[in-house]
Length: 594
Image (tube, rainbow, N blue to C red; front, side, top):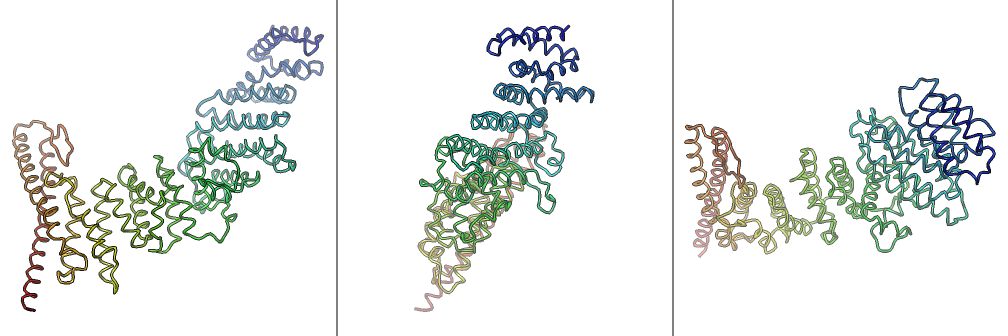
């Protein structure tokens, strides 16, 4: 019945001129054709499409059958013989139908699926889509629309993370990336071969440029790359990245020119419009490009060999800042790798303090602190700590001094402050061992820095448990200074500042310890009573209330806090003892001299 209906419609339309086809004819053709497919009359449908007499009708109306045919091809339960017929019908429709209508129809079909069907649809339709676009005159618009639609769908797919996930490629992203390169190549070649630089060619070049930038952001910003020893040339993301960077160079935007001028007010590449409209996206894309080139070594042979390590570090710091602002594990990891790669090229103590006047040279270490303190992944926290230490090692003395002051004022984290104080101690130690003192870690400059270290921010009311790491590091630094610097030499300025240190640090610490110990001893007594009654109660430890904790666990926590206070108290007592010994010894020496 459906076949007869379709033949009847075709017979009526055969006697009409193309411009006389009515909207009603299109609707009836579509319904009858769909019914033929649904009822399985695909052999008869194929004959109708193949009939030369129906060529004009199929050209105008056949695109309506693309959707039903593609949906059948995407169904896995079709017999091989039937699938072969469906493919023949599909190929004929692509060959015969109006390319303009086909383009919109194919893109709608690409947009329809979700989940794992996204890649199945894209892999099926990419080649026909390329064929259709090649027939169109307004190629720039068509290529831009197609690439944008494809990228939007691919960006919905999860990016495989591990080697196993890449090899399994459950969602087909890796296959799609490879297919997308093959889809784009002819259009890149067309731009390269067109020597006239027509307006249409420039528009096509712009659409390809947008696609390359989008691809650098997704999937390449988050994609993981296989170790080159493991990949054996089969890393799909490395291949995709290499081709995308190659496209950039081919269409007249070689990556060295772009990345070394990104962010400057005056650029040597002229695609300013895109940069202004898509600034955030471009920042991510450029950071991804820097990682691909400098860490993965993709197309690195195109870089000038004369670039100094300091220049490369300065260039990469902005990109590292972009990476560290993100929250994805793979993206943060790339930022840390790029920082390590850039810093290892530089000698220790050679990074001049003036570089800290550049915004990213302060925001990157602050970003490392955020990763160290907030990131839930231990490996990234440890790596960030190692990178912060490496960065400190590269700075000159004034740079280290400036960074220490900055981080002590901004980190708001006891552990980080302890780490900085330990670094200050190391710098003082090196300064005291040199023939010529380092003015930044001795004398008046050091006294100014010690003012930030040897004091309690909230006086005796400070939460000693929460600040225990910082307090212990400060006491250990003070003990070191008392031992290493004699009062008569006073290289560090400690002895002239001792009165302030006692008033701002030691005395408030004594009072705070007494108050804290009294509080926790009272809490222990309450917990012991609660243990007898077997009641659950909350307890406040380190400024945080822990509700409904069993009494036996409460007691362990409270005793641990008391142990920390005892430890602080013992170091404090030793520091005061050393101060007393040193001042007494100096007084006796002075009396002896007189």
